[in-house]
Amino acid sequence: MSEKVKVLLVGAAFSADLHADGYARIPDRVEIVGIVDKALDRVHALADKYGFEGYKAYDDYKTAIAEADCDVVDICLPNFLHHPVAMAALNKGRDVISEKPLATKVEDAREMVETAQKLGKHIYYAEDWLGSPALRKARELVDSGAIGELQFVRARECHSGSHSPFAQTIEFCGGGAMVHLGVHPVGFMLALKNNRWKELVALTSGGGESNLVHKTMEGEDWAGALMRFDDGTTAVLEANYVTLGGMEDSIDFYGTKGCLHVDLTFSSAIQGFSIPGFDYTVEKAEVTTGWSKPAVDERYNLGYVAEIEHFVECVAEDKDADVGLRGVDGLETLEVINLIYKSSREGIRITNSKLEN
Ligand SMILES: NC(=O)c1ccc[n+]([C@@H]2O[C@H](COP(=O)([O-])OP(=O)(O)OC[C@H]3O[C@@H](n4cnc5c(N)ncnc54)[C@H](O)[C@@H]3O)[C@@H](O)[C@H]2O)c1
Image (cartoon, rainbow, N blue to C red; front, side):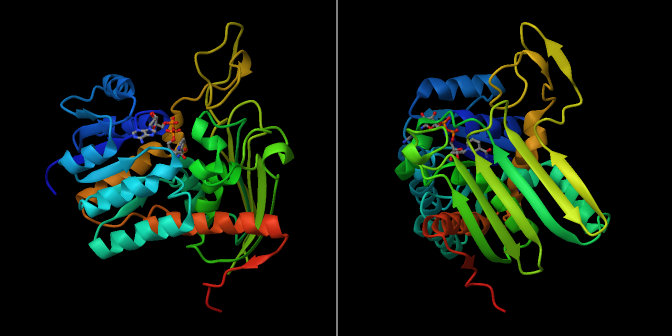
């Protein structure tokens, strides 16, 4: 494909802004042909912010998918809409980028993946951690043998609660903190080990009144899983909505000859003190006064920029994404998260029946 990749961006709020930022950094390779949101004012605000021109604004995804001349439909809508929008896009002959989680139900995610395979289309699964420069470097260091044989990984994403009203209801989002935030450590770890997990056991808070803090949220506000992979590597994967002070994305690697500590959100080169407060420091920070570490380029550090660039290249070359960023990886991640819920609910250890001995 010699021309620009034509994108229909579906959604114009928080995650659409992250993706739009990625597209805006490679204007010679991308054309935003349409933006959809039922709130049309958000469409225009997003386009103005990034200087997109010549796009068509839609308030209905069905009309947009039927009409727009695009190569890929990029879905940045609440979780329960990923499946219907992806199905409409695939059936129209478009590739699909889907925000995480791939769907709210495993059956829906499987239908998306199987439909793409049947139609010869690609689903690109937006796991931004895989685009993070620090995590890419850490993987290179692990692969180089710098910390010996990798034995244990501890990874977590935690903050104080989602901004999205859809995150409160399981029907709309598929779970609680583990499906919203744990999707990153779980997806990262599965990609690191090529989906070859062997067993898992988990605990979560009970949702609603049984939560630690968020009593009106249906899903859990705290979740932890222990996983073992078929090469013997173990992992502790954690997600919670009980963490104040800004989003924690931290990943620790322990090997036989060393260790690595990666901090994606609080590792800014700037440390500062402000009495009135900074405009912004890190995602979900409740206050910005006093001592803090204002992020330099948060979106780059978290991986969104490289993720979008990779997807644009894949669409242009009609190829699948890297491991961890394919539809099948989104499906596997959702399956594992649902097994984490099952383990917690039933108090059982679960083994991977798909892994041959
Ligand atoms: N990768 C990440 O780090 C990350 C971060 C945040 C959100 N997300 C994911 O992105 C997705 C969207 O989350 P968000 O935070 O951007 O949500 P949001 O609530 O900020 O925005 C959702 C947008 O969808 C629009 N919308 C809702 N229903 C619609 C419909 N039927 N037709 C057209 N527009 C509709 C709303 O008007 C709103 O503007 C979710 O799946 C979430 O999990 C990913």
